[in-house]
Length: 169
Image (cartoon, rainbow, N blue to C red; front, side, top):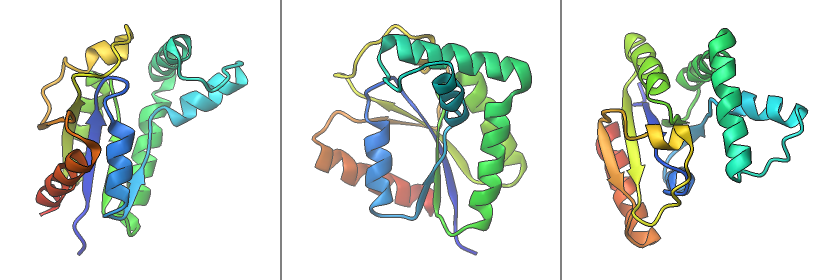
């Protein structure tokens, strides 16, 4: 059986989470899912222009929290994506989640199903410091690993690939 890894990746806006996931996709068969995709669709219907500026990010954050409170649809969508991942050919499933309670809930569910999951905080000293509740909450969780993304992209990318290989085993 091919080894599969689920990485719940977190960190403030602008630390390089998307860049690192793209670098991983050049080396591994990767699937990326987000608990915010459904939220973005609802926000677009409500008039959001797709721009992730401070008001846009705040809208997405508030809307996601409302959807979690109402019926937990973002979490349910992640569980469906995990099921697809387990039966497909991808090696790594990246799941960006910022909220500590949502990280914990998804990690526990995957571990209960026998999946290998690691929680990862990506940091960068030069990252934007937006005053958003989800960004501010990223440090309120005890992660399995912290990846300091402060080096030039080529060097950070190589370190990230090495780390992923170690995690996959």
